[in-house]
Image (cartoon, rainbow, N blue to C red; front, side, top):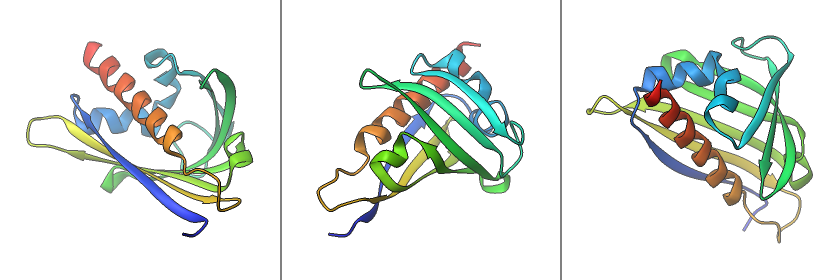
Length: 150
């Protein structure tokens, strides 16, 4: 078993793939209004919707307040967002950490988000980021419910 790996989860959406993608690609500052798990998201460099921008997420997981500093990239045609960790608490746990969010449509008018977390552990005994995968899936469900209710 190596130090690098990936974990993934699929999250079904009730809202359309396009509406959901729009929130995460250029309106991510609204996420704290939709999920009490996220306290704030701030632009550190760039802006809300330009690839290469750096954002800082402030959140609580397992009772601990943490920050996640990400460099964001988009493939609008494929509705894919890539988030590379460039700072924050996650890099105390993992040597490398990247989230890939692929949003697709389904036949019922909703969508699906495939979340893949690509990581590299510091040592063999370190756990894969399953708790972060579940946490991100919960945020996606919160945002989906919020979009449906507005």
